[in-house]
Picture 1 (cartoon, helix red, strand yellow):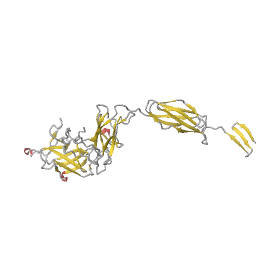
Picture 2 (cartoon, rainbow, N blue to C red):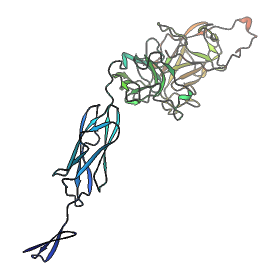
Picture 3 (cartoon, helix red, strand yellow):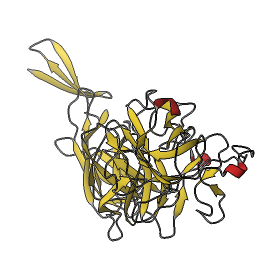
Picture 4 (cartoon, one colour):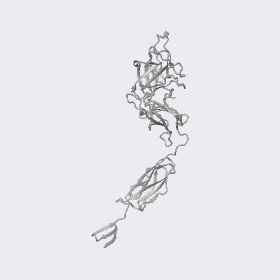
Length: 414
């Protein structure tokens, strides 16, 4: 036999079988939990379904509980702002993503319980037309000699040729004010380069070519190179991949002036005074003089590979960073004694740029003399040369190395 009564606290039931009184309390919502739909994304206009579950203090579902949905961040619309939970405790709403790419937050709330939030994303529309494109075979060492070095060499400078990398008329080079935390930036002038999925330190950007320093990659492998235009923006566009081999070395001298046949004068300076070496008027307005026997010269290059000091890509080289591979140097076909070579390594303060400091032997003849360096068994182009002209005997009493304006030779990256 059971006795039923009602008081102000609820419904009371007398249980004579067990000699007790039971109180039945109305079921109430205690917790909202995310049921489905969090973390979704789509283009503008995409319809997404989100839902929450309403439970009581015992974890049992509660029906007929009004749940309010509201867009609290971003642009989106809801088919209904308030939806009651069903017999399964689920309350669901449909969200239509708005026009502005970016995050969208929808908050679900109900009286007496803590709200929950859904984080959604409106994706930018796919870029059509004017996509960046790397030319087939369009990634090479930045020295661009003949033949081209169609490979990536860690720490060296490489160039990608193509279209739509940056707006027409763009011509920018990384300078001291562009450094990020003291290192070369991996995003510059709105452009990034991916090499094997790693962003490379940037050197220069135009609409049709970008130069970058090669990250540390495994020699003998092949990696995908991609150019990202409008990098870091909702409208960024990425090129198709160009598959490029990786070599431990691929030495190449930078030209002071580049010619199509590859017979290029090497970018060179007097190693003591910094005066430019080459035929007079090699570059209009520049002060050039030929090299001389017994002169210490610096030859500028790239693609010599990693250093014995563990220098990292993008790091500004301070002090000396010699190669960690064996090398030999010939001028006019004659091997230069090791005692004449004072340094082969990364040029100070110039990531990706290498230099060879060599004392020209006393018997060096006049002329445009081919210079070849071999690093790790790989030789540079035989067409790069240095112009040498002995000092006339009549000038023997003159100062051997006249002091010229000191300055850094800036190799031309075409």
